[in-house]
Structure formats: structure tokens, C-alpha cells
Image (tube, rainbow, N blue to C red):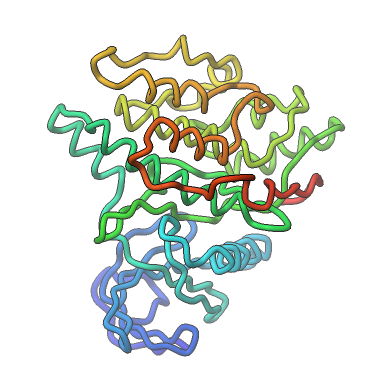
Length: 324
């Protein structure tokens, strides 16, 4: 369990500087960041010398939030071992706070994008394909889980980190689920649109089917493909395809109505990929395994993301029911 000792000025209240999580000791070095959920600490894993990030999710009497944080830990644990998902190390509950130990990624895609904005430069296309390949690889692993795929539901530039060895990894599985939705009654539509979806989706990346629930489209793994299209657009133009809370703009979206790059900026193949991912109708939008195969067809120099042949697990059927 955590042991309290002297704390630095401004140290988060109730957070010890030495911890034992999963039977292994950690020395907390400094605060990396904080938010509504709690805070993230940089720590040293004493036995191995590894630097790790410890996400501390604090709770009062909110049992639903507590259960959701434990679910995040278990989902990440089930997904562990993939090079393009943030690496799970351990988790433990200490005094009702959930401590999640992950690999420490010192770089972020947002910082890289901001550097280009300040320098008034853009990503080279070869580098864009490399980032895209890593994201497709990580999302494919999530969607290939059996018997039910795991949908991240919060793929965005802020949740993409980079490791010291150059890998791009997807992080923050707080919104992830193995549940899909097909609302059929006004009560279900109201609950999803007013209660659940505003909590789990980031508006700029929320697909049309999750905004216009009266269209009664399935909300499933295809939401990650739409969000990936938004990320790819953002990386290319250093501008989000949808700003702020443009609900109607997303529902009535058309890639042809958005600002497009100059022809010399990116190849036709790359821009066609953006258009393909941002197809408004989820029935016409590709699944992530279609994307992976297409990526290898147009970029054979990129390491294959999924094996040849059928989709892994044939894209396991989601659970069609109403639950968070």
C-alpha cells in the first residue's frame, strides 16, 4: 500500500511519494499533469529502473466513476503487449483511489504538431504515413478482440503519445467499451444523446451516427475509423476538420465542403484515405481491417499491420444492448 512521506510544495493532496502497486515499489518523482479525473505522476520503478507514468483516479462517493476506472484498467490489461497501445504495467486500489501504472511516453503528437505550427512548417508525407500506420495497427488490435471487439471511442490527437524508441501509441482507455448501440426507442435515444455520449465522446471527433441518433444507425467500432479520419486530416492540415461544437456541420458533413490541402502538399492517395475514413454513413465507411489492407496496397514499404487473409476473428460481433 502507499506510504506517506514528506511532500514537495504543490504536491497533490493525499498522494504519497512512495508507492507499492501490484507488489512492486515505485518512487514518485513529480506531477506530469492533472484533470477532472485526478492526476498523472512520473515515477521510478525501483526494481528495474524504468520510468513509468502512474494515473491516479480519485473518487468520493461516485460509484459509477469508480467502476468505470476499474474497467479502464482491466481493458488495458486485456490489450497489453501491443507496440502501438500504451503499455499496461499494473493497477491497484489504494484508499479508494485507482492507481494505473503505464509506460512513460515522453513525447506527444500534440507537441509535435504545435512545433510545426510555430515554425510554420508541415509534416512530411512519409512521416504522416508512419503515424497513420501505428494508429491503424493499435486500433486493429482493439477491434480484433474476441468474442467482442473493443472500441476506444476517444481517438484524438491529444491521446496519441510517442515513446523514446519512436513508436506512436494510443492512450486513455477511459471511454473504451466492448458494447455497441442500436437505439430503437425514444427513451434509448434520449439517454444516449443526453446522458452517455456527451460524457464519452469528444465533439470534434464524434461521428454523425453518434450525433443524429434518430437516424437509428448502429454506433460501433466504426466510430474509431471516423475519429482516425479526423486525426489524419488534423495532421495533414494542422487544423481540425470540425471546430468546437459544430454538431450540424458533423451531421451534414462532406469532405468536399472542408478546407482541402493544395495539390502539392499531399499525394492523391493520402487525401483519398482521408475521404474514405470520413464517409458519413457508417455502413459505407470501411472497418479498420479494410483500412489496414488498403494501407499496405498503396504503401507496400510500410510494414503489414494485419496478416493477409480474413480479418482477425472476422470482426467479432458486438453486443447490441444499452449499457455504458
